[in-house]
Length: 418
Image (cartoon, rainbow, N blue to C red; front, side, top):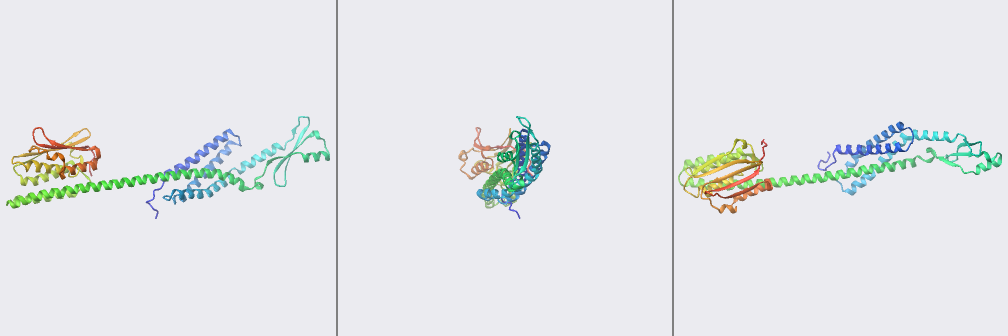
């Protein structure tokens, strides 16, 4: 089975880069042909297109071999590219030679025909042009000067004249020389593409490392959120057990039983969701209703809960149990600290793209909570910081007319939780 842990260059990028490289080659050599007349343009055009197509095919055939070295050190990948592209370049050289051999033969034949025609001599008469081969197969031309006369002396003079080398036919020149020359050019193109492939591979490795880092950060963030969320439940349980103990000690058995049943409903609700996941504001408010019902058993005459949550905001996602420590603080510092009735108010409102949640009471308004040294406010601050960073903040303090309020401001999302 292939190793899916190693990042690979996407197939689309491989195809696109190979096609782009060889199309660029095709355009450049076609533009050169327009400047330098080498033969029939249309005949050369389709041959160049054939060579270009072969270049794309050979490059893509070399790709699976290069891919086997993905994830290896850069030096190993570079050495592999240099070796793999050698036979690929030779294969392209063979294709190129086969494609253009007929054109080369036609050019040699045309040149031979032109040089074999007698040419007029400036001094009168005509120069005879003779085409012949030497013992090595080189194509030579002899031009007879009519002013030199005839005879054996003229033959000796002709033999002494310099002869011009026109062409060394391919069958005697050596096919490997021509292939080597073309292969070097193709090798450069293939190595250029291989270097691009290595760069794309390195980019994929960097992106994969960034994705892994992001996953690790999200996992650490989720773990921290779970830890903070689990910190809330024991704190709440400690307070409610103390309340339950007080009811039992005072002989209020029915009230204690009702508190136990309400606690059961509360924990079923609070433990059902993922501790690191958001819940709808409606679910969060329902949870706080459960909690206040529990505390109402202790303070049936003193606790007056009030909820002000617009219907347009009930679907807004919020961190689960984010209001719990704030409501507990109101119970501890306001309701339990006085003998009169205290109203605990939970209000939600929208302020542009922000959701503003306020938990307030009209109790004594103790300022000891402002320091945030208790587990409640410290926990809420930490959870907001982990979940939203600098996009959320908390403010708390006594109210001018008495009482205490804590306000959470966090991003307002209109998405619907599944």
